[in-house]
Length: 261
Image (cartoon, rainbow, N blue to C red; front, top):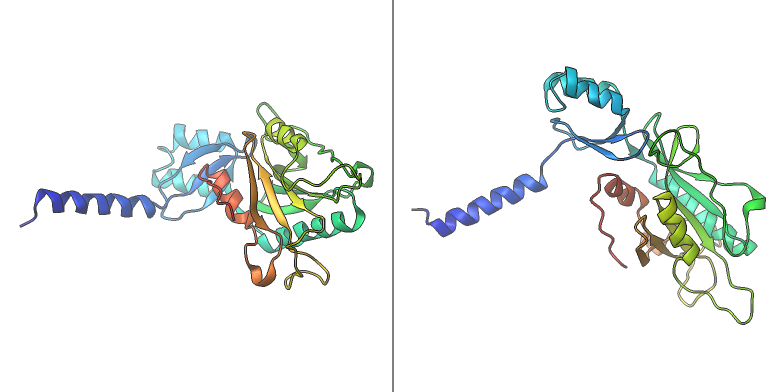
C-alpha cells in the first residue's frame, strides 16, 4: 500500500526528473539577442531567428509547439554553435600580447546571426591601444538592437588584458576596472579582464604557445555586478580554464549563475 508520504515523494521525484530532462529548442531574436520562447521539439538546441519568422509561426502555423510550426522554425533558423578552441586561442593571444606590449589588447566574442556560429574576433586597430583603457566601436541595426561589431556579428562579450601598472605610486588591482563596469552596463554585454601582469601564481601553459601564462580572468555583467577569479586562460592540464561556450550558452538562455574558482 502506498502511503500519502510515499506518494508525495514519488510526485516530487517525477517533477524533478521532468524539469531536468525537459528538452526543447530555445530561440533568440537575431536583432536584439533576446529570448523569444521555445518549441515542442525533442532536442535541446539554441537557435537564432528573425522575429518575423517567429511571429509567422504563431499566426499561421499553429504556434511553436505544433508539428508544422516546429518544421517552419527549424527551416528558418540557425542552431547556435560554439568554437571553444578558437575562442581559447584568441583569449590566450590577447593575454600574451598585453603582457608583452604593456598595452591593453582586446577580443570580441560574437554571434554571427547569419550562420549561428559563436567565435572570437580580434580587434587589430593599433591606435586604440593604451595602457589604461580601450575603445569598443559598435553600431546598431534597429530599435533595441544588440551591439554589432561587424556585418552580422552580434557582440556577446569583450575580453581585454590589464597590463602591469608602470607608475611607481600605483599597483595593479586584480579585478575589472570602474571603466569596465560602465561599458558593460552601457553596451549590455559581459566584459572580461585578464590579469596580464606578473604575479606569484602564474605558470607555464602546456596547451598554448611556448611562453604563455595561465592568467586569472574577472568579469562584469550588464547589470554591473562583478565576479573576480571566475577562471583562467589556458591552464596547466586544463585546470580551472574558463569555458566561454558554457557561459554564453547559458547567458543566451537566461540561465547563468557564475561559480567563483
